[in-house]
Length: 97
Image (cartoon, rainbow, N blue to C red; front, side, top):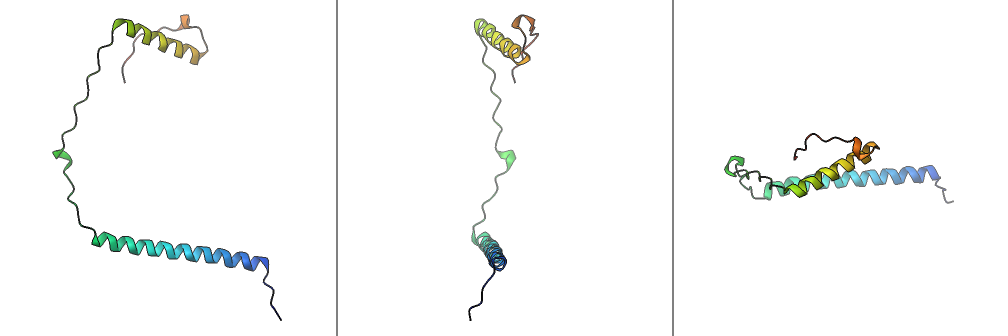
């Protein structure tokens, strides 16, 4: 007589199989990582002080006409964001970030 396997038994066997295989893969990967770490040649770490930091670039001077266009564009963007008219916006200074 053939035995009938119920649905919960199939689900449990499937989940157990998946997790056992995943645990085996984790163990295999850890073992291979340890073996390859021992076999890999050690590379000397360069000293951070030996590499000079690049000097920050000085900002290029902006022509007067371009500066006015930039201020106008910023004013329009702020006015649009605030939902007001551009004539209500007053920009005191602009700093380059």
